[in-house]
Length: 392
Image (cartoon, rainbow, N blue to C red; front, side):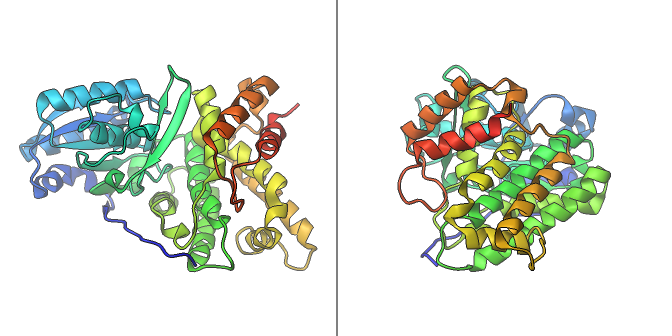
């Protein structure tokens, strides 16, 4: 096990109707003026918008609104948010939504103290030293951004999608009411489930000498996601399944399932190039295509770990040959993802071999590290994974 530092300072308010406390929670921190940041119309349709407004007014919290966050959030709206915050002396960001809203809020919070293009922070040209505090009301279980130190933002103009990590990104608090996710449709729920699963899956396969403490946690969390994901595929209003998936979202990406390891998240980085190339590709759907392909191409790099995954997570028969266990595990994951009606090949999004060449060139240029390979990602390996996903 490698030396590590671990912090997860975000306070979780979990349970029914906890969102009605938002005004008093913000007041308890001493803040009096916030940016109310959200996405499209979903929070209005489920009545959450009015609840937030009423609670803020009741606690005499002043607010300025900025809606309109899209999936794969764009830096242009971040720039608008920074402008609003500076002109109105905003003291904190209140992000109400899923990962896209939270990440947009995070870059606004960091960009508040930077006079340049906030995308400089995303591309690591500028390192934040200070940020506005951020609080969250979670409406979609997926990204884990509510507890993570990460922030992923796109620049549609530059056709780039880039993440950056800093503990300044960790929210002060998150309100998690599983009932707020009841209106999330099957496809979006599935995309979220895949993202949650991938956050732990990728940490599980990061290099280690033996099974670590974090690996045992990872196996349990992945089993939880598989079991409750299946329940949600049958009944989107299963409260206990929603609750389990929601808390798994948070703890899958706060670092707990990767302590003691070097974390690389290769499949996420491969997917970022997909949705940068085509922003209509939902992040989780891209991951659902990439994960089985990555397994087929990379299992030989750590066969014992893949066998452990097959036996302990996918519950494959221990008495069959190891290569059959791995094959059955991959097949089982594909079947699980299919429960949510997700696309299975990149050509269904219009991705071509020329696009694969473009994405591979970008990845090599970024010198991304992958799996337990200590050097930069191999060009041919990245190409093989993408082509394996392409379809006929």
